[in-house]
Length: 193
Image 1 (cartoon, rainbow, N blue to C red):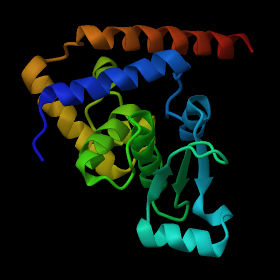
Image 2 (image 1 turned 180 degrees about the horizontal axis):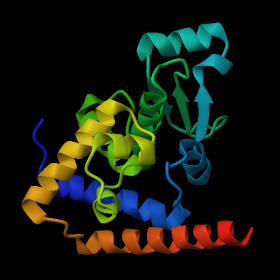
Image 3 (image 1 turned 180 degrees about the vertical axis):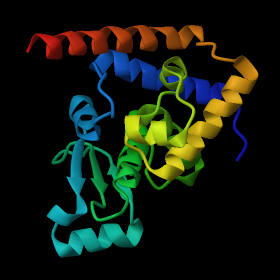
């Protein structure tokens, strides 16, 4: 499906705002911490009874977001047996997009945008540009993502650098400033321990 660049920019802005509003700054981004801060319950298939987990597996082998009910907070169910680990993380962040935008998890109309959201959340393009990353191995190591995600992010980095060089857009600057400040605080904290 064709999407305008502005749709992707809007997703990037939302992700950046989540980083800033919820104090997310350590890489690789911790999916459990993000869900906890957003108020989303994160439940693996393996802790569920066989009947319920079987129903979920029939619907999706990866994971699913289920909206809040009177008896349950918004919940992401994910297949903790799905390999590799980076793919499980990707699934969780994909479902976080459905939560943030209050979408049905099974609505294919939004899946490509949820994929972009997940990649951008785990591998924020402006920060990778700032750090000078360009190789899949660097991204895998820093962001703890699968090779497929790292390759896709590298493609995005390549395309963006070809079009804009290493320019950081105005709406991205607060993210860079925040991450630099927070990571400097962490470095100083470690040095003083």
